[in-house]
Length: 450
Image: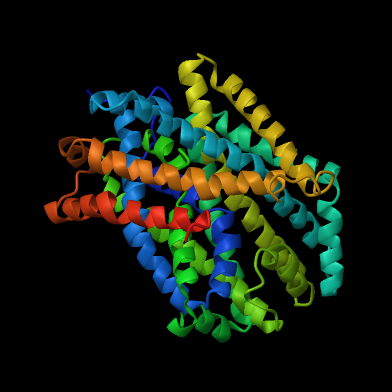
């Protein structure tokens, strides 16, 4: 029997695409993708990344959406129901717990970083970076993260705006992403136009799309594989719970391809917006995470209309983070509504408060407790390592194994409704063998086994 979601459904296929794309498009696209592409030689990395999206990201995303729609509940209850249906071990519900906890932990520190972006909107708009030197910008950043009260205030504000959206249920999520995603795309296009006018655009395009495989290393290939998996928000329960609200008539295969395409387009547009500005100011494209918060402010501070477009850039970062954050907490809220018989509002208050409280540990790890480490890692480093290197890859592998090996082919054929049998066979082969093997390799690399 088909389950019916007690939380409602997306009103249309477009609404789901926008929501899932919003979940996938986050700081990883705007912040991480440009700098890891810069560190790994540009165009060759982009080609390998696109291939990895096709053979790793898309098959596992299809599987996660399928499990969500089949179960029609929070990830924990969905996996319990699907395991019973497949006559498999009840311990498969732990996969749901893994996703819910991972999403909760990620949001606890993601909110802090998103708070930085909110703070930088104000700073850039007020002209703080105009004419600033590299040392000046570094000092501004260091002073900011060293102030726990400011970080806590921005972290709190971001959590409040996130929970206000989630409290309104599926309709609230839908209305928000229908505004955020077009706004995000419009800002990106404006920034690309600005880069064409004020930056070294040809050099940026060449860097991003000219494939020089002599610059690619085995490390770069593994990085591309890992980012292809992480950029689609897989293994953290977000896509599964969004899939549980997907109408039965919507094709999972074609919809997933569109989400993967949209996510990739945003990442490439971010590169086209960032690299021309970096090159025009004779800066280093492979400058790592500091590219966003320390390198780009210098560039915006020395360019015509830099304050205007710098402000737009950090608004873009906030929007990207916001669209992702609402999906990270949704699985936990859905579980509280289903299992604790709480109202949606009360569930949001409890989930939000606990997430906010854990986030204080991240706030303090940049200042007051920066010297307090476990195995050489701060509280923030531990959360980041635990979620990105262990929980998400493990969740992704388990999703692939359940969809490919445990769930019956009859049920997966029904849910995917792929029009051509060869498409289903290709997906099944990838999700059974190629995708999980690739994620295992990424996992082993992330824990320094290979």
